[in-house]
Length: 214
Image 1: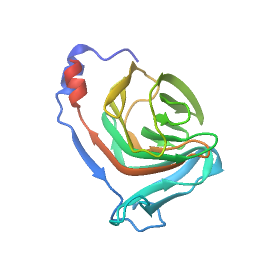
Image 2: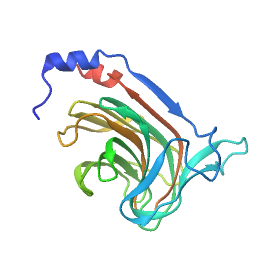
Image 3: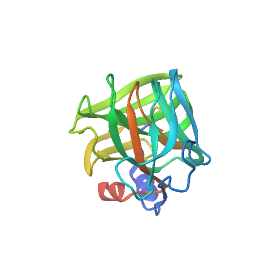
């Protein structure tokens, strides 16, 4: 697919963005968030559960991945978005092989989707596409990712234009044509990462960053 023509960009980015933020506080502890599904790309035994946030005493819940697998994921299949944004507040807690937190979008199934992630062991931010169960690197950039600290990872995507930001700073800005059309959104980890997700936001339509780009 060729880059989006200027007039089409203007139409897409003029669309108002609509979104939703999920905090997991209404979900029962020890279970998946209501309506979400979980699995793994490749092999492994991931464990996704809503748990009490261990750092506070006010009853706040988090979504925790405490199992292991090649690429564990947990998505909301009811959210079908082609153009918009995903954002997650995450805390990498532990992991000998990896300490990663990521977001997925245009998720068609467990073997086909985009993913952006930040890794506290490698101190970088990466963008990938997964096709037929194989992960392919699009781009990665060095970035400070401290363990056991909350971070915010945000991706904005319109057509084949993808922007990835960590803690308010944009690190990746690329054009990629591998996966198009609407798909589910959710969160992602890698290997033995034990990761907490505090909030998850998503929305469809144009975004402020893309309007500024024009």
